[in-house]
Amino acid sequence: MAAANTPGPGNAENAKNAENTGTAENTAGFNTRAIHAGQEPDLTTGAVVPAIYQVSTYKQDGVGGLRGGYEYSRSANPTRTALEECLAALEGGGRGFAFASGLAGQDTVIRALLRPGDHVVVPTDAYGGTYRLLNKVALPWGVEHTVARISDIEAVRAAIRPGQTKIVWVETPTNPLLGIADIATLADVAHEVGALLAVDNTFATPYLQQPLSLGADLVMHSTTKYCGGHSDVVGGAVVTARTVAVAGFEDAQERIAFHQNSMGAIAGPFDAWLVLRGLKTLGIRMDRHCDNAEKVVEFLQGHDAVTAVHYPGLTTHPGHDVATAQMKRYGGMVSFQVAGGEQQAVDVCGATQVWTLGESLGGVESLIEHPARMTHASVRGTQLEVPANLVRLSTGIEDSHDLIEDLARALAKSAN
Ligand SMILES: *Cc1c(COP(=O)(O)O)cnc(C)c1O
Image (cartoon, rainbow, N blue to C red; front, side, top):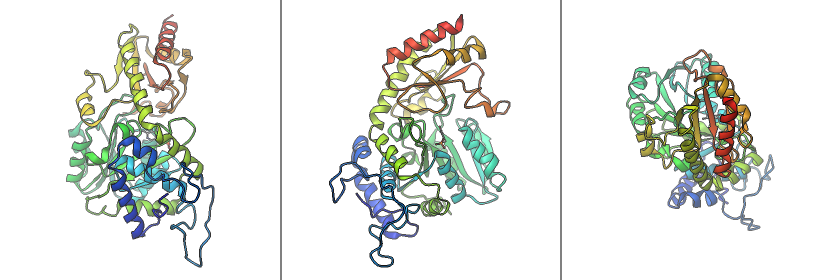
């Protein structure tokens, strides 16, 4: 494995290696990169899977004589390096960083790149934890924000404070209404005012959407979701563009590397290994998630008790054309509204047997939830409030007829 690419700040050789890896690997197809990038067979044993380097420190050959740049596992660990290289290759970025959670990565982005007095534009339907981080942690620290409908370019322009806005934060598709933001246009809008475009790519994954190729400067993930894919790990990632051209942020990559090491919210070796294993099947899992979601959407559209279905793959979805232009397919997340109001939505969530009632998303098992009382309960009464009769589905990779029969049974039962 390419152990020389260690995330030590100010190590020119590492930066060079990261770039080389990126360039060489990126000529290969997505699935080839997912399986091989950062994961060459072990030099001494030939093991085809990177080892879980469950270790904190490394023997030095004389003082300062590091083998492959490793000295302490907060700074760098070979299992984490493998994951970080793979993430960078999949997003087409300059460098990847793996964190203990999605929010740990986002916190690092905020603290590494912003200063008191700076301002962020954040989507109305941002992930609740992201909004809480900006509103309850960053705001008291002096970083301000304005909430804007990110699918509406004019609303984003109106929310920008030229000279003060340093990040335009994007999620697309959004949670739970599957709103779509135009990444390429927003990159131009952000760059015109000297701000970075940071995209939370958790819902789409790099298999379906590559924000850096559309002009974004940073991509963030909760790898807890599709990247890990098996509901068995909590993790986060940040990938920086090969070149960040926004004035004052040319060193964004070094600043994130420095903060990752200084604050220490890193992914542990076993967690990094689980995400790395998940990434190997990301492409085939996403295709199956999409296949199943499309069939579930078709079923829901034909059901009497369903008044609205939210899925970017529908031609009636307001973001359909943008989604078609920037996504390979439309993903595994679906939400729908029921005629019987909040009570029916709650009843449906409680009546399924194959779909598991629970928060989170992106695993192989299908999940169902009631956003107004579960994932989005904290935004009730705010401008981020979601409809009370909304049900959110994370379509897994089970057999689609089982998923559809289960939903049909639950809808029938809830109507009684
Ligand atoms: C889950 C999630 C996060 C937060 O990630 P954690 O791993 O839970 O910290 C951020 N953004 C989106 C879109 C998410 O779904």
